[in-house]
Length: 473
Image 1 (cartoon, one colour):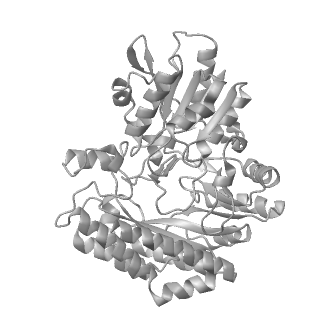
Image 2 (cartoon, one colour):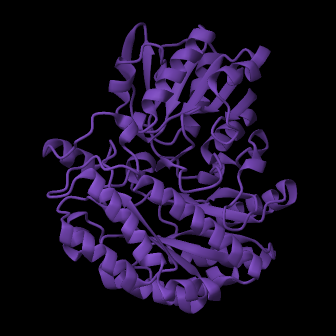
Image 3 (cartoon, helix red, strand yellow):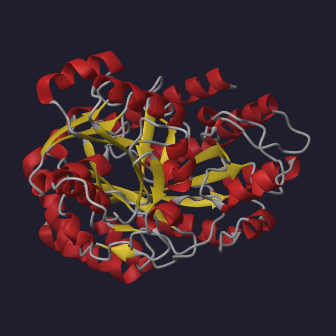
């Protein structure tokens, strides 16, 4: 069967990957489409003919795309979607259906997982939605179409049958992630996935899925489940070696909802990487309550460059309300420990969660300076469908925006008492300047730059960052 896999066009560069659904506005390069690569791999191994387009990375518009598809004649299409891009994504699918009337169209992503029935009922040109992780369900949909229509249900799918929207049973999350095989990166424009700091090509490597924590704002548990599933360290290392040898890539984003959920797993993986002498550079995430020096030392030895940490707020009361499960001092201790072992830290803060005030915003800005991570990012808190935050905000009438395209980490869709949108945007810009334009930060950058060329790249990246912030203020 001829199958089309698409990261569809959008008016601005956008990230569509698992829980990540945000603009690329503060990045210079596109993010690798790992889920599309996985879909290509599992469908190719099932015997199908595949064509893949990352329209964001390749800057392909609708008309160009249809010309590139040419005579391929797709029978089935899987389309990546997010909350902020959903209106555009559905419009694209409508155009795809008009161009190829017999094509079977399937959408996947966190937004359509949460609002699958609403999306299907309002989009007659959409044949199915995959709920949660898409790969195993996609293979079954292709098999079902290939063998001819039948009355059997496809778990994890909401499908249009005989003009009626039917919600089939949930699919159990696959425990054996090694069964996914490796992503088929050869179908994607690898030359477009260049890390803005290293100026080197990079790829994602998925080490695990799922998150056991209860943060009210995160879609990860809804999309990948609350049980953490790890790939075997041996499989991860084989994939890395493949990427080095076949694609010449040595820089990797270890993609996981909670990478350090199991310190013993991380240590085993790092030992395998060290033993394999792969000489790679990688980055991932950790929580503030994983104070394991031996783990961090092994991570550094295996090539870890940076870990991101969800700090979220400088207010302990807000951390409690969002059920983060960590304290402010945990963040400070983790940043200090990472610095001592030589790993960079990036701490994220969300502005606008329930209970936010002018004073708690000031607390977060002061706390960011106290924690003194190498990098920091401030984002408007966004109530994505599928999260408790969305349900709470809708119930209490906190949402001030009716257009999905504004539900992204660059706009405020939640009312904060005493603060209008423009004031909030200006406050975020000031927060960046107050953090980065400190002598302490500049000294850290100088220390961390291993070579003059790296320092120049960091400065250039930072300058581009600030220019975009100024434009948004």
